[in-house]
Amino acid sequence: MSFTYDFAEIDGKVPMIEFLDGLSVRERAKILASVEKLVELKNSGIPPKENLSKFLDEGIFELRVSFESRISRILYFYEAEEQIIFTHGFIKKTRKTPKAEIAKAKAIRQSVRGDGNEHRGKVS
Image 1 (cartoon, rainbow, N blue to C red):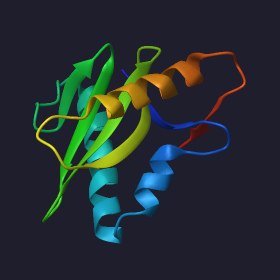
Image 2 (cartoon, one colour; image 1 turned 30 degrees about the horizontal axis):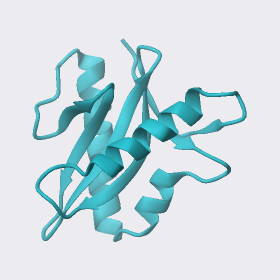
Image 3 (cartoon, rainbow, N blue to C red; image 1 turned 180 degrees about the vertical axis):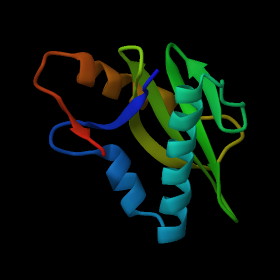
Image 4 (cartoon, rainbow, N blue to C red; image 1 turned 90 degrees about the vertical axis):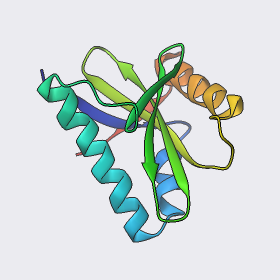
């Protein structure tokens, strides 16, 4: 297997990059390391533990990253069998992942899969 990942691009904007831009360098590094860890596990055929990744709803998953004083969630879905598309991220403020964030991820997924006018930005 050879999993890859992209960040969804909608109307010329990449919500995941916008989220990362609002974080400290240290927090960004930790998120990107978690993304790489997820891909590494998937490529090894090892299912990620729930403390790293969790299924949420209708094909939407969350990547769980904890910082010193706050917690972030990065939502994603699978496109084709081996491509992970990260939709956006947020700083978690409640016990459960807000339904509005899951709905946002679903809307981004629909746009990515939609009418062909949307594009994904490639990450290498």
